[in-house]
Length: 313
Image 1 (cartoon, helix red, strand yellow):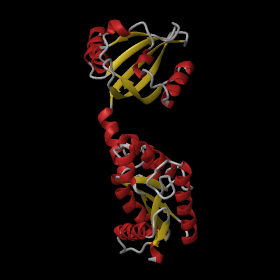
Image 2 (spheres, rainbow, N blue to C red):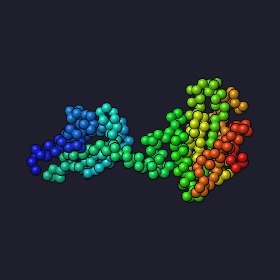
Image 3 (cartoon, rainbow, N blue to C red):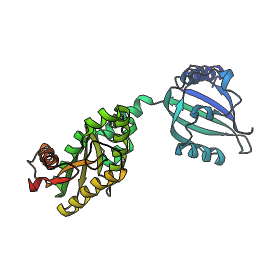
Image 4 (cartoon, rainbow, N blue to C red):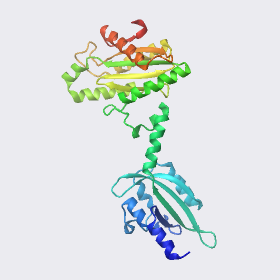
């Protein structure tokens, strides 16, 4: 093949092409094509004669990097997708393939790297997976979704509404029960008035953290329903187990001992209404919310700092 044609193909390629020198310590790049410069924002002068790990910055906790390192040490081909960062700090998904070049003795002298910006493809794949994943899988991707409450860090109302529908369908299919606990922080308006909104925010954060550390099942979760209201959804509990569980929630918040001089106990407390239901195919998920809400109303009516079950209403 004409060497000029080959050179032109490399220089005009839409994919980034790099060559590293395996005979030198740290396997530095000795060539990058213009597409690689455009992809990364770095000029050839800035990035040749050094190892390309600068593309990951401080984001080194990527298992794929171990695959690359092992391939280089073994003189083998590999294909991975990495989180890389342009010169301006913008992250992009980089599909990297490296192939060894051998000399006449069989020794690996260089590696050729082909780099593709596959950000759009990865984002689409993530979106498709998120639409079909179970609750546990969705938790793994929550940083890519807007499902967390900005103040407390637990799940938000949007996530709860979506997962309630999903979990009701799963419970109906499997014949499991679902327990929904609706939780209200007692006398929270007066707490804000007395201690200020920053103190109120800190109190909500502590309560949310306490509630979110009470789960025994991977599918259980807590969410901020709005304002000073929280919800907890759990599957597989009996009525007796649910009673013991919500009683422990009340005690956990008491144990935080967040001072509130306008409260009877002298501390912030919570009221809980809960319902335990086994779902039929025609039963809407909204029924569980309505039941727990009615029970919460009765708990507050009866003096707060307590729980109430829908079946007892």
